[in-house]
Image 1: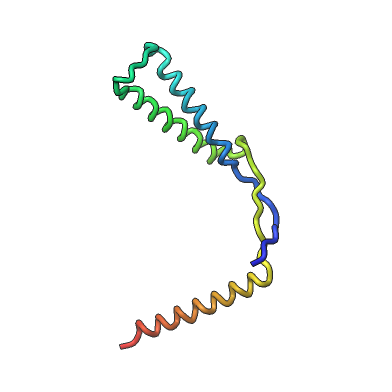
Image 2: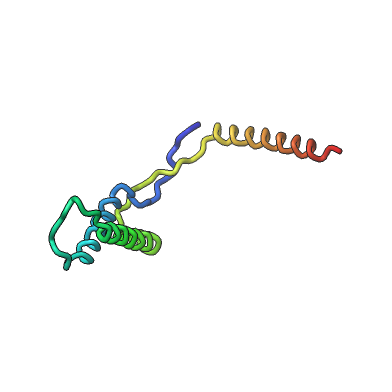
Length: 114
């Protein structure tokens, strides 16, 4: 199996998008909880805060998904190679295809027997 690079295409650099999502979530959370009293008690469950975190993460994720679908070019990109098949790859694929056709024909004849 040969691995000859046929060219490159741009693709979003997903590892760099993680911090963007985290920062967006934190900004949304900070804005939504800005007027809350500044206290923290480890004995309390903080269900309201958990709800706000879930909401902020969901909102940031939806915004990122929407922007990726509509404006992919504004995010960090990386060059991803695509590979061109060699003659050996084409021969191997043809052999596999012929084998699969024979198997398929054999199964058809088996199922059509009375």
